[in-house]
Image (cartoon, rainbow, N blue to C red; front, side, top):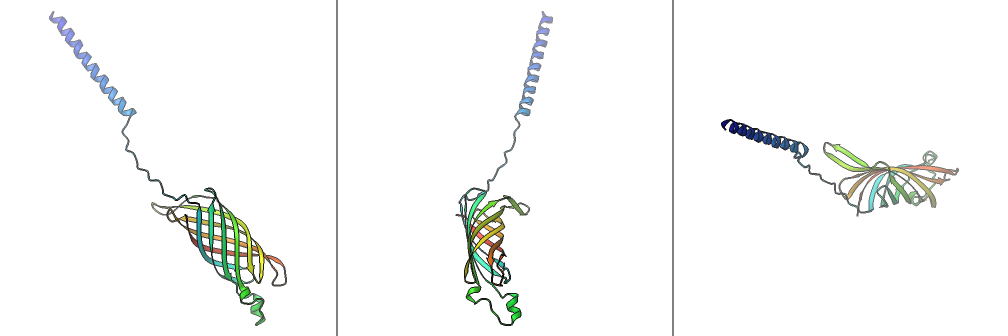
Length: 213
């Protein structure tokens, strides 16, 4: 009888040990399958979704045969899609003397009022390389490299001249409503002031600011 009791007691201890081993293994497996992971807080950049972008610019414009002078103006862009936009521009400059005028010792091809050059155009633009620009560790800004092409008119030397403009630009968003621009444009129009009717290339390089609303 005592022998049977010892066998029963031994089987009981073996059952308890087996149960504890199974529970321990289950807990270990459960820990591997479902680890506790700390969630990382994600901050989504706040960028306004407004489509209108008015701005001002200032720079230099090289008018072929008339030298390089300061230029200033304003632009208004409407963003049709995240990549495509339409832009209207007005600019103004005053040209200097040609080499002929400087060498002739007093001859003047244009009056003072005719030396004022104003242009306006409507262009189609496309953002080629949208991305981010980093100016230091942890200091990143949304930016775009874009191209533009359009047509318009240039008021110069007493005539309205049909103008084609081609260019590139770089836009950097300082925050969710203010952008900084760097632009280069080529304004092409016909001119015959020096006795030869030719297509002139008039390069403009400018920087400016714009806002979104």
